[in-house]
Length: 161
Image: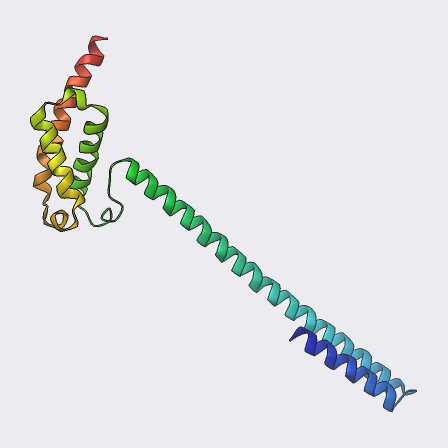
């Protein structure tokens, strides 16, 4: 579009000069068309440039969004939560899942075998898609109670120090 307009102006200019070489009107007409076509070319250039800037901005936004999503997913996985069901799972179940993960990774030495078994069963249920949808918030009470009990033990040991 830009090159066609410029070529059209050049051909018009040369035709006017060939047909009426000494005419003052032809020179003024050519100058007028040249200025108008240059103005048109500048406007087209500015619009193309702004469109390219918008596309570049949209690309940068999409790229930043993908990086943020990947970073958030990594953090969620580190917390022991499932990214696939994170948005649809009840809040109490998510708290229980995080508590179970923390207890099994950081405070396993404070748990007895029955508590470890309870936490592992809960993790299996919450990580399975079929059983995850069937879980109700009341099933998280057992895990949260174990977490509260371990927190009390930790507080007592830190208080003695």
